[in-house]
Length: 300
Image 1 (cartoon, rainbow, N blue to C red):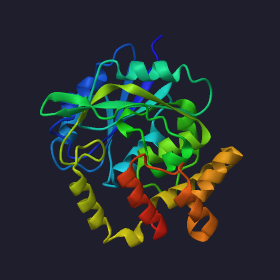
Image 2: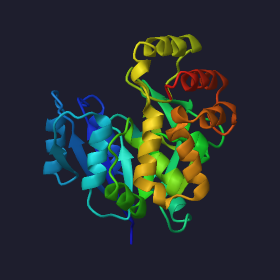
Image 3: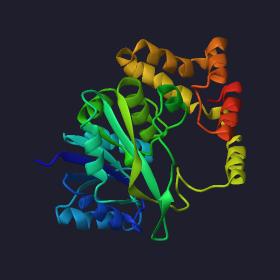
């Protein structure tokens, strides 16, 4: 019997690439695929495209107010019907036919608990594959995972145990749905990383990860961030939510790691630990320099 995977897609003005992505989801091998879409207030032809696929019985979609991609995905996680596994899906990529089969195969080897799978990606630009986004194993310990999400949300597949936990403990704050799901799995369950890619990650001006930017472009973006950095405490706030929602489910070691990030502004010892420990790292020298500056100025 084929495993059922509930695929959850949030759309917003995605008419350009939406059909190609939906078709690639429907064509998954050896998986009973169910596709649930939430539209986040599109004004282009996205809803007409979704209507067409829904009339053919290939997906179910619902219309919503524009609440942003992170909260839109979290609504899908909370409202999705029961299934064996759950997958996050962006509107503009292309899934290779074995994407979900590979994910389920890995998840089935992980045993019980809150289990999350993520994989590498292929750059996909102008209809051509341009190689892998990442090299090497990106399996990440919790301390590093609190600093940087090392698994792209569009590759994430997780089991029902993790879905149930996410639904039972809704956060009061997130800045990225995939980062939240990733850290919950790291802190209270297990994460596996597949060095192979089973997805074509489309490159365009709206990419959030994996895009090929120069060092100059990266630092110019950081300079622009300085204008609003006084209001930025995203990782600190997310760690605080992890403690509130899942502190009782963590090991003592993991709780201590999360507490260090959540309360570094209130403890010189914890701030020094963040600054000095090699465990709290982005894995990149330039990014770590930016990270240390943010910690020094209480803007983590």
